[in-house]
Amino acid sequence: MSHRASLAGCDIGKLIYVFADGALAVCPYIVFASRTPQSQYNDAEFLVGNILENEVGPALDAYDFHGRYAVGANTKCGGCGMNSQCGKGCPAAVISRGGRIGDVDDEQCPVPGERGRRGLP
Image 1 (tube, rainbow, N blue to C red):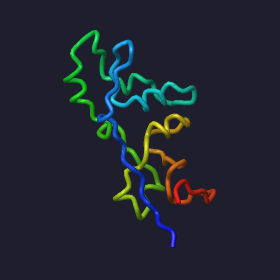
Image 2 (image 1 turned 60 degrees about the vertical axis):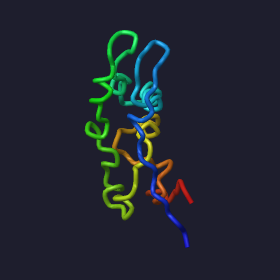
Image 3 (image 1 turned 90 degrees about the vertical axis):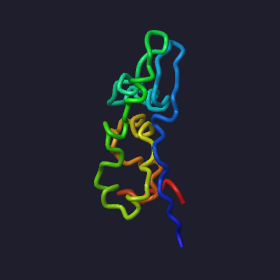
Image 4 (image 1 turned 180 degrees about the vertical axis):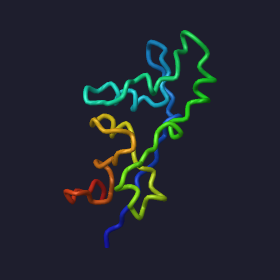
């Protein structure tokens, strides 16, 4: 019998990162991913200010990634039996491959896709 585990959830907002220039990111991975040539996002969407220029606490507290973006907003996730307990994977991974937030993290999704590929045992 094959055991399928759902994907972990997104930790954006828990992995605060300060770049050398003082820019404050809600997640370093999503900023790096948004800077790849194939990204459809501007890194500024995931930066909340600059600690060298102003107070960033209020902007950081107010940043609501999951209120702005719907992770797992696609037909595959919506029709999956694991949808309610799945964390939908990493949006940064999707962005780094040129996808949109909400697309399937098909490199890690344990449910076979159109090509029958599985990312997890």
